Length: 194
Image (tube, rainbow, N blue to C red; front, side):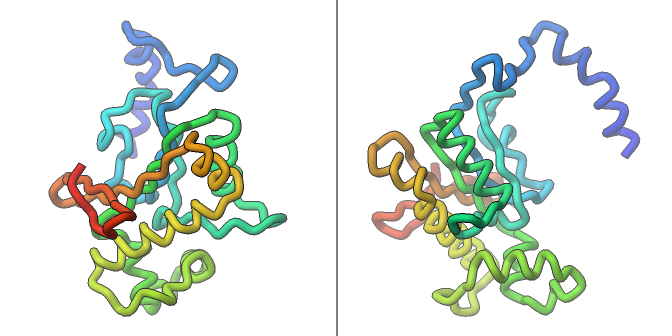
């Protein structure tokens, strides 16, 4: 923890030392994309994409979960998606799953989440796994990613912008052990390297 504190203490010197600081919302920030991914510490969107401050609008949840859209049901995830699509006007949304995902493994083997009832409930209520038989961890993580994309497509503002050609959705799968990133192709159902 001390190394994190030390870095935070001197961060302002590194940022102001020749680089422009990231713009805030009032400064006309315009991220290139929204990046929805897992909270797992091994998944670092800016390292994967090479993005600089202000280029990605991030949403991180346990298991990169996107809850189903329900009118009147407020979630931080739904508000964040709405803000990115409507206020910031992002043109691309990337949902990124990954290998060795503890949330997906916990969902597949629900007994592993008995000591974390809130996490278990979150994963159970956001994805029913009705179409997914017992799968190997990596296959389960890919099926989970596809399910999140399907739920995202049902958000009304997302659906309207996709239909109008003003928003593109991408499903990426990051292999933690190799660094390889694959892209989901809905037309074939396959994942191909970027």
